[in-house]
Every structure is written in structure tokens, then in C-alpha cells.
Length: 111
Image 1 (cartoon, rainbow, N blue to C red):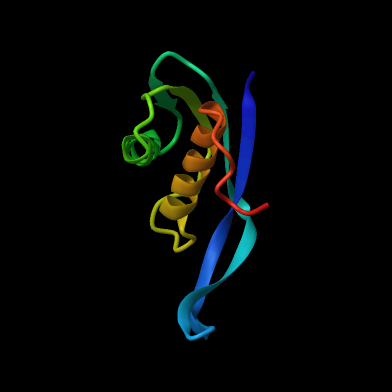
Image 2 (tube, helix red, strand yellow; image 1 turned 120 degrees about the vertical axis):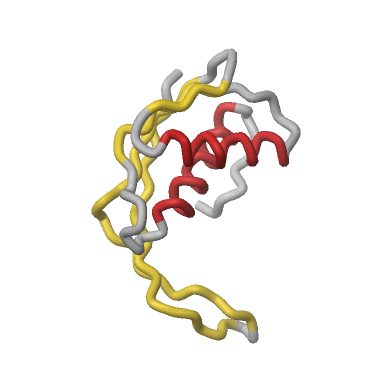
């Protein structure tokens, strides 16, 4: 089964105090989005724009959780680098969410 996942860009506005803890205040914007498709595969294989960044995030995530290096990810769209829209962070979170689905792990991100 092929799963498709989309995530918005995030425009950071600044830091705020929330319950005596620092927090990032940001807005999500529709464009440019992150869109990718993932399916189970015998090895970790990532293609598309910024695949090298996604591969680094995926390897770190799988190693941290002691999971096998598997999953085929095709990145269709991603946020360009250095736009100030949290492209790397959003790509990393999208990759983590998709790898959770491939490995049948419970969702760690809130709904």
C-alpha cells in the first residue's frame, strides 16, 4: 500500500513564554507544501528533491529507534532550503511520521 502525506510550511514569528516555558510562535502557510509518498520496501530508498536531507533524517530516526532501514519514499514537493519556512524541520517531521506508518508504530504526533 502506498501512503501519501502532506505537510504545510511553517513561518516562525518569534519566541513566547507559555506556562513558564519558551515556545515558538509560528503560522502555517499553504505554499510551498511538503508532499511525499511512502511504501514498505526491503531497504531505505529516498528519491526526489532534497532527498539527501530526508535520508539523513530517516537514518537518524531509524537508528535512534533501533528499527530496520526499510521504506521507499518518493518526495514529490518540498520546501526549498533557506526560505525561512522551517523546511528542514517540517521535512524531518514528515519523514518521521511516514516511517512510523511503515513500521506499524503508534502515532507520536498529535492528531
